[in-house]
Length: 148
Image (cartoon, rainbow, N blue to C red):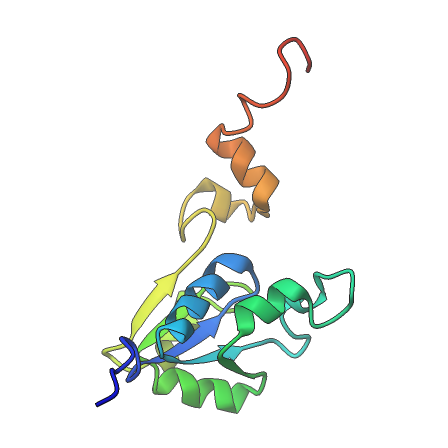
């Protein structure tokens, strides 16, 4: 008898346009889950992160084992049948919009740089790796003594 993958019976829907939620989706796909990525009409911006052109190497790695749609009707149907929704709240998605489509037993995971409330969210602070590292203080000990 073949061993069952740990997430083989799970339907995961990914609403992301960045690395963190996409990586979580990849982990579920690697564990056997049926992962569907919902992209905007323009597609995931990671598709263009490559010197070689689309699809970018990073996107190819993160999208491996997933399906993808960019149709609003398909998105609604996928969300209605999701066990887990991974969202980074980009491309116009909000927790309210997501939960309007999901079933009552769906687990919605919000992966955002600043959470869902607070001053950085209210002020619409755009985050990237450099900003997040500076805000958490990890850049303070870098560089050479005496250099500014």
